[in-house]
Image (cartoon, rainbow, N blue to C red; front, side, top):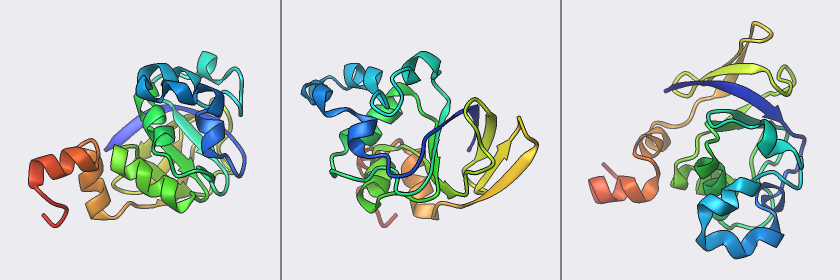
Length: 165
């Protein structure tokens, strides 16, 4: 599970309203349209720079705020390979895994906007190819990797019947 892309960096306390602005909440039944507006309130030019396969990098408490799963789902639909942050709001973390969006907890000081990253989700490593720096991340537990491999919890349960397999 290695992925490569550019990093787009944000600070601490990025809320679900930063990820999917509330003024577009009426689009929640049209997720591809909602995904066109991700991170707009944190960076109005984000979607002009972002390419599918890129990463969002942040500080502490990424995904704070409401518990709606539209925020991580919109990130996944937009093509975010993974979110790398110092910490995540607990409900956002589980919602992201449940919809199939990979997350890594790591120190992010050695990553800047536009840096080219290679991320190994199995090993829990972030390699900043722009700076020749390797950052250790907390690897995801095996059961979460299995859920991600199936594209999310619903697909996992459809395939295996429950989460104890």
